[in-house]
Amino acid sequence: MKNRARRARFNPLTHNYLVRGVWCVVVVAGISCGGSAKASPEQTPAPAPTAPLPTAGLAGQRVALFPLTLVAAEDSLRWDSLVRDRRVTLTRADSVIGELLAGRAPEVTWVTPEELRKSARRAVGIATDPDQIGGSVLRAEELAIVPDPLRSQLRTLAGLVGSRFAVVPAALVYKRRPRAPTAPLLVATAELSIVMVDVRMGRVVWRTIARGEGADAWTALTAAVKSLTPGLP
Image 1: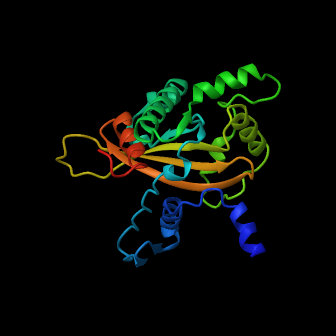
Image 2: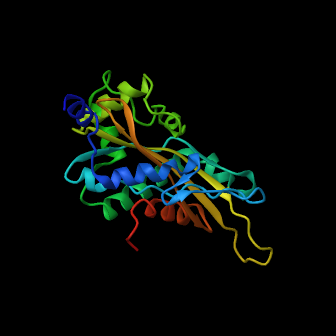
Image 3: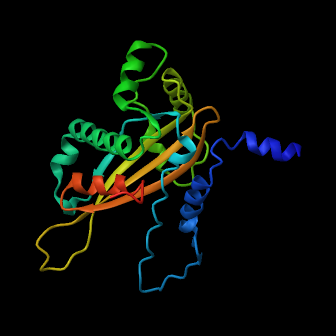
């Protein structure tokens, strides 16, 4: 009984929606939600399915949504301006992510990146600018414990807005999708690496890569974010 109680204290998101999401992420290791997967030597293994955002376990809570700090695109897309105008791109990406999550998961009280920035400015000398933290390191799939100083930075910023959980878009990468020579439009895939951190314990409690396709960067990103909340149009 003592061991069971101890485990419960270290599992703040016990809703089975989260459990299913994390289980599906294990597909990377070659195990699917329905059984073992065997890839043909001639075929590229399909990417792991996007794990749904565990909003049911967060209902009624304040959750800090951190700004994106890393965006990249394959050279073959010729989207030079996307990377050159980095600040403009990151700001627009934050807006797309924030608006879609607020509209599609209203049961969560989302604290936007702009609110985090304002809180950090009011706590100069205590909190780090959320645009300057090293959130992109969280894109590493094997990372389970958040390293310092990122751990303390997340804890401080989330604490300022009364949140235990931080959702961090760790990286946004655009890749060119192969297409038929006669296809009229270039199609790109947006891959948004996103994680949720329990800032009190410094642990990654959920992670996934959301994917979406589109003829431009923002259509693809919109499709990727929508995949985090399946069942909605």
